[in-house]
Image (cartoon, rainbow, N blue to C red; front, top):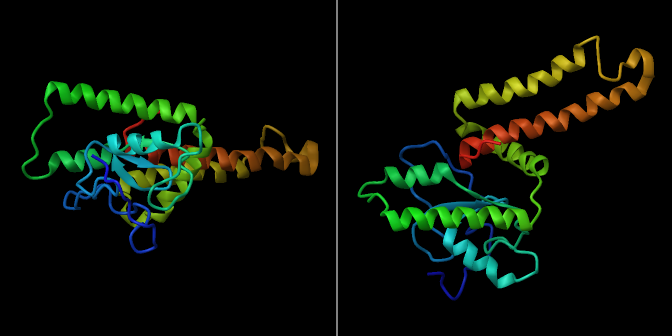
Length: 205
């Protein structure tokens, strides 16, 4: 259960979760709320990992107010099931497969996470842009195959810039023709972030 008191946020105790999601030897993070190993992990938009049950219990304290992260007090725009951290937990020595009742409970928790995001209006494009930023911050840990996918998406923007045919051609509309080039960049950044997001959370959207 969540502890009654939470650690005060500080640069030393509350860094964003930026470790290697794909490492088979990395330790399972500690939930900052219950102070035990994260169980059925979820991750906030600011990058902190919690037990799904602990975070949902924490979020209920806010009623209709904006939910803030218990670690850095930033607004939580969205919270995600973390497939990467859950796989790490399943590979841990001594892991016991969940019982049927636990499987049902896990499905209920994930449904509550989805409802949390719906209530907070977590936009796909905006949130994926956040994930793109995190991908580049954690670039040293990103597997080669995933890097290639992200680079391929971003390369499409370069190709689009160089193509003689645009949706709004500069040769016809002048400077106004650069609008479609400018709009294409955030769209592709969002797609790249979605690729990274899907790898970490197990979502495919």
